Image (cartoon, rainbow, N blue to C red; front, side, top):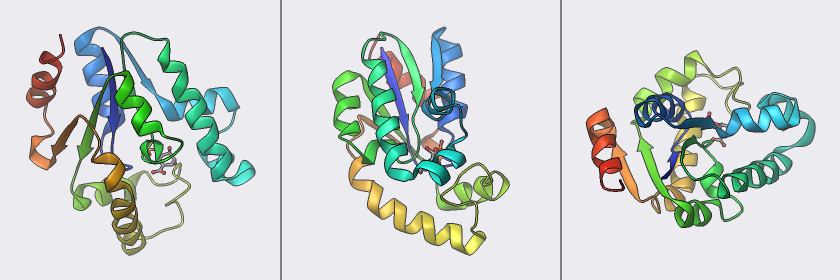
Length: 168
Ligand code: S3P
């Protein structure tokens, strides 16, 4: 089973990836970390030195490496589903789960850990709110194509288990 976790920055994709991979006794991966390892640069450095377009090309290319892997949980980046037909590709490969936390939760988390996120590192609370509002609107058509959608309170282990049980 191939599980792709999607959602806005700060939605907990990495947290749930770790949890689910452990539960399934399988590999858990973070696309951002894979990009950083391949490029030998941080995400911020790639954005700054090579630009977002290069980042998105690299992201799409490294995502495709998961075509040959059979079982895994992958935490994608917030923008991954929205470029280079990635959403369509992930849906052809396995199941996609959209983790949809309310802005209040996202802002709280992002304020604490915005430094390594180049798109928001320069923003204050109001700026992050505005960024999220715009991005959410822009990304919703892609995220909405996910096989499963967990919103707010629905984001819990029980619901992840229910989803996974439908595929084993
Ligand atoms: C991005 C989200 C980040 C990372 C990059 C761009 C985005 O991943 O891929 O900074 O466009 O929303 P996380 O969602 O894991 O923070």
